[in-house]
Structure formats: structure tokens, C-alpha cells
Image (cartoon, rainbow, N blue to C red; front, side, top):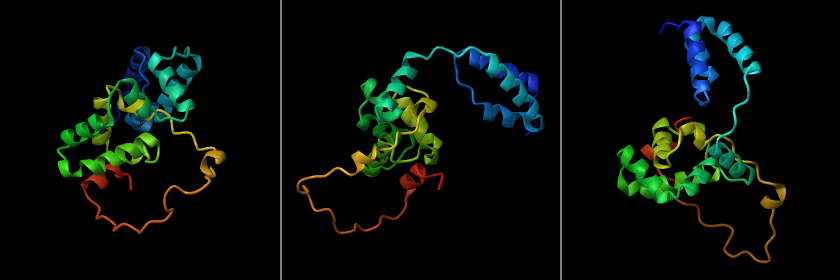
Length: 186
């Protein structure tokens, strides 16, 4: 693939920035090929002088969710009144998955929402289905990493355990398409 002219890439980046988008500099640098250093210098100069755009109400909402320990995915989904089941159904439908595996998809969606599953390892098609279901951009779903738990939260004391702490190990499931979609980075 031939590198694109630096001036064209720079103009494209500026136009996206002016529209209020968050263009990914790394993508533009990749497209510049051997001229990436030249484009990087232009982008650095522009970003150093450019006014910081006002955050959108959605960005403020996502930051507040992050500050409270929620993931952006969970905040967007709940703020828009979208149920987890609707997100799961959207994934199953969009990817033509076996409806019998719906429960497994739902567990993975829960892990994503709880910050227990690294979004970078999830297949792009799954992320696109989730974004469409919650009416958002993929980048917004995982804008911030979940905050680490405070030590006090991890070591809560209870008077008596409500249930046995250990249970019989479950039979390991054989890896299937669902696992590969949610762990494609492995």
C-alpha cells in the first residue's frame, strides 16, 4: 500500500478535528508511511497551538461515570435505557451466532461492562454490534479504563459467609466461536 501525501493526510486530520471528532494520530501516521515523521511534526505543532475543544455533554457524562468507577459502556447503556439483554440480542443477531450460546455472550458482555474483560481483545465486529445497540461510537464505549479497586473494597470483612467460599470446579468448556470473539487478542 502506497503512502498518502502528507499534506492530504494533514488536511484530513484538521477537517476531522474541526468537526469535533477525535482523529487517531497513529492511524494517520501509519498511512503516511516513510513520511510519518514529517506528518508527526505537523500534528505536534497543530495540537500544541489548537484550542482545546469544549467537551460534549456525552464526554462529561462518560468522565463522571469513570470517576464513579463505572465503565463508559455501562454508563452509556444505562443512560440510554438500553437493557443488557438488548445488547446481547444485537450481538447474537449481527454476528449470526447460535441463539443457544446467548447466555455465554451475556456473561462476556457483563465482564466488559464490569471492566473485567480487556476491550482491546474483543473482536471489532462485537464492538461494532455493541456500539450500534447503544447508539454510540466504538471509541466512546471504552474511552477510559476502569479505575482500580481501592484496597478497602477488595478486603471487605463479613460476619459470616453467606455461601461456601469454595465450590466444585466446573468442567472446562471447550473454546468456541464466542470465546474467540471476546478474546481475539489472545
